[in-house]
Image (cartoon, rainbow, N blue to C red; front, top):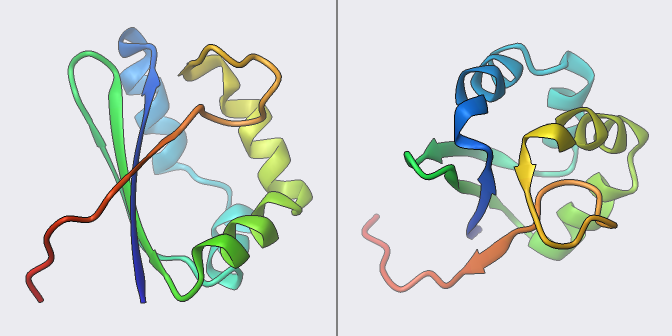
Length: 106
């Protein structure tokens, strides 16, 4: 099982709206995420808008490719785009920075 962690930024003043969107995540998207083998997904917020995201999957690259090719994910990322702080405006979704796992205690 791969444990995946990454960071990205949202506009801090939009935290409550971002949280509300995730409280009401589309059922079709939730189903698609599970179908792609992604489990235990959590997102954490820092006051400067930095988001830490963590999930588990058997194969990160396969899961991301599968999810990335799904129309429901593209619609969600376009819907969420107003929240993201990013330099590359041509990407769909947040501009993420992958984190290296340096410790794990089962």
